[in-house]
Image (cartoon, rainbow, N blue to C red; front, side, top):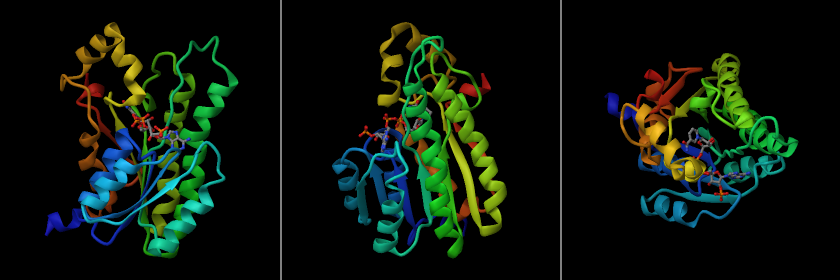
Length: 252
Ligand code: NAP
């Protein structure tokens, strides 16, 4: 029956950036759908771990800084040691730096590109090598409205998210023959730490809210349905897609 194809029972998912915000919401959503989790973050994630274990699912936390490629072997090896396979990878960890492009520094460029794009590619590569040895898998990248639009004062962030949209399609083209689906979720304007500065700016906050047809900022739980769909059998014929969860922002 159709609802059975959304179940993630028996599946193993890795979610990066799972301490807070969208990563935490998606990790909990995957656990609610039945998956066991490996959660990765540069700082400890006791709250996320407690919620997942409270749902009766297994949870392995790995504290790792994804601004370099160094932690990738440990993430893959620990997942295999604990669970013997990788079914789902959610590349969520991401950062943003805001400054006028005339003054933007090389460090703010490199820091954002490293976490948001370079590590996403090489962690996907490492996970896909394991998925290809089994029956395939699901890779879900986190894109942005700035995969489609330029944004304001965020040149490295919009470049990274434009890159994520292209990378998602490239990997989908190459890896579907291994039964690996690569898709992305493009969240709209979501209430997390990432957007606190623009929510605190009364003028920006008002102009953003005016454009969202849903009339509110999104919440981490708004991504649960999309991530479970893209992680499950229900989306087996969906590949290279960027699913916008934006309260209608792009339709305006
Ligand atoms: P957030 O609240 O700032 O959370 C980001 C998470 O990633 C945190 O748990 C953070 O850990 C972790 N992280 C950051 N850098 C890391 C690193 N080098 N290594 C390991 N973990 C790292 O942001 P969010 O809004 O949930 O964003 C999650 C993703 O959604 C990002 O890719 C972001 O670009 C994307 N996104 C967000 C929005 C939005 O409106 N919020 C819209 C579109 C796309 P610590 O907090 O412990 O440092």
